[in-house]
Image (cartoon, rainbow, N blue to C red; front, top):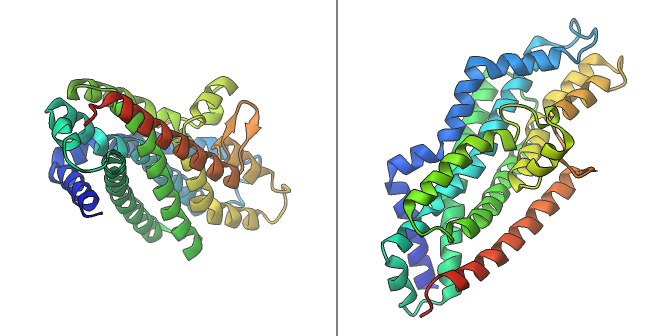
Length: 303
């Protein structure tokens, strides 16, 4: 395993030494934050107040504030889970473009170790970066108000982030191994950066789109991961709001906001619960891993 660990360490160092790559990998998250400050916060608050139906004087303004701020963090994390793994994986394309892949394949290192090393290093890099974002976000939110979130939910958030990084890394490896130049992968990254915020509902809640668009968006594991994050991060706030209402609406307000902000992914008529979303993402990740091994063996030069 010494060769595997060494190659994994090499891939990690390549990513973390490139400060510009780190910045660009966080570009979508930065865009989400800027848009939130400019107008998304007002849009989300309006969407919430529009579903209150006479509860305006009961629901606390600080709870609404914390709910919307929590939505911001889930949007930032969801977009980071897409863009950071992709950026970490561009080492594969750079190695191929520079001919380093031929040297790697000429070593005694087994092919499964090579492909697994790329996967593990990118997953670790992505998790470290996204976990840092999650930690900063949780600290900022806790300082700005009460999230009503327990230790178990915090641990679950990091677990969801790890699952998201693994699934996104496996998926993007399949695509990146087909690219032969950095210019192609960079162009695709530009498209990915633009689309990711819409796919996970960071800009506009997915419930605002028609069923077909929602179904297509929820094919991707990042959408399920974002929904899982909402359930863990915002469950305390929603429960507190429901307790404040005291059953006057029979839970209609909480049900409405969970539907509006897509707490459960829906695809082709099927509504995923939290556990079914986890199972879906895990299955998707395993299928992607099998596909990336197949593509690697077919695409890269044999020793």
